[in-house]
Amino acid sequence: MGLRFLCAALLATAAWGQSVTVRIVDHALMPAQVDSNSPAFWRDGQFHLLNSTGLGPVLSAGPDQFQLSWWARPDLGRQVNPTWIEAVWQDADGALFAWYHQERERVCGNVQRPAMPQIGAAVSYDGGLSFFDLGLILTSGDPLDCSSKNGYFAGGHGDFSVRLDRAQQYFYFVFTNYGGDVASQGVVVARMSFEDRFQPAGAVRKYYRGSWTEPGLSGRVTPVFRANVSWQEEATDSFWGASVHWNTHIEQYVMLLNRSCCEPGFPQEGIYISFNADIGDPGGWSTPLRIVENTGWYPQVLGLGYGETDSEAGERARLYIYGESWWELEFSREPRPE
Image (cartoon, rainbow, N blue to C red; front, side, top):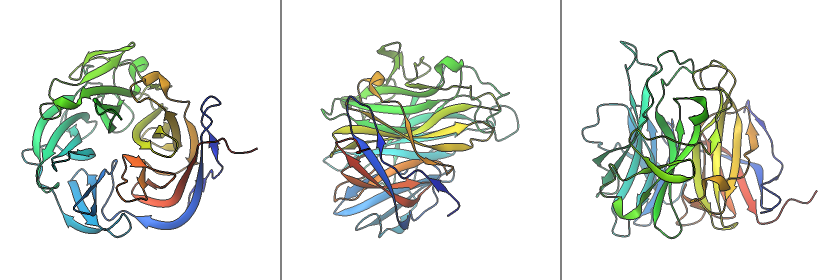
């Protein structure tokens, strides 16, 4: 496999006491190429999965995550920039809300990169076969930095996860800020009222200095996990690309993170995990602990039970990295015995 693993159970915090064990299991592979988080949903008794690259998403379906076949390439309408669908939520009436990472290219002259990522919203009324664009909802107010040495971005917001809280009051956006002063770079958060899902443009508020007051478009941010070294430096050191799910077994939100360190081009030092009982409390996330080292990007879970997805999982879930799984995560309410 060419990878090295940390396969011991890890403690979250002494206060909460939960742990997770990483086990090597039989290989599983998502059906299409993966270049982002891959959101899933159930519809008409079938498991549906969206895998995205810069060419757009591919929608697959089947009885479960291990029996998926290529189905369709969704129509994203009038999108003109490379667009990745990274999160979805399905209403009881079947309306499927999706949020996309989009990259404005050639912002630094006649070169494709560095690009400027931004986050938008869309909705589908046919199970993900076609989407209506609802507009941009999260953009950076920091100026472009075309001297950036990370190899991809000249700033911007992207590489994110979206989760609805248990009370169904707010959607929470956990995303990466790649620009501005290093004190504002890293993993950041914003939220939007559930009632605003059909008209999200201008309705998102970023978390800044203890409150949800900054606008989603061009507003300021305070990181949950701040970059140690700026994304503009060759030796950047930062968490990025969060994937968040609600774990029904330990009754905690679980965040999986990439960590890029310490060369240009997003080299991966490892995959990390963090826990939080209240997604509405940005300061409640536990210190990230590494669970897999020296591997690829885009960690996420897919729950194993009927109705479980990348948004919700139970005691056991498959861990996918870059669309490939050799791992199962087992969550426990108790610390691992020494």
